[in-house]
Length: 58
Image (cartoon, rainbow, N blue to C red):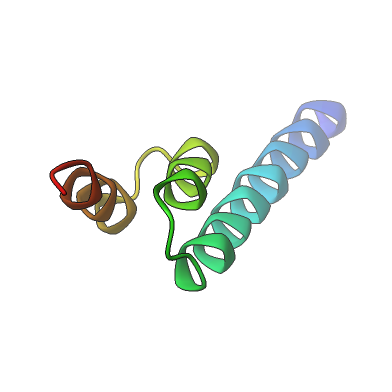
């Protein structure tokens, strides 16, 4: 039981770290490649995905 809780905690920490890294990359990005990298780290971010779609239209 403790092992399962520790594993769940570890997965949550990794997920949160990925979201933070994605926002750091996204906030300073001006190229489509960097926004795409941020989208890979946090595929559920509507803000990142919509910006990537807008950049593809250019």
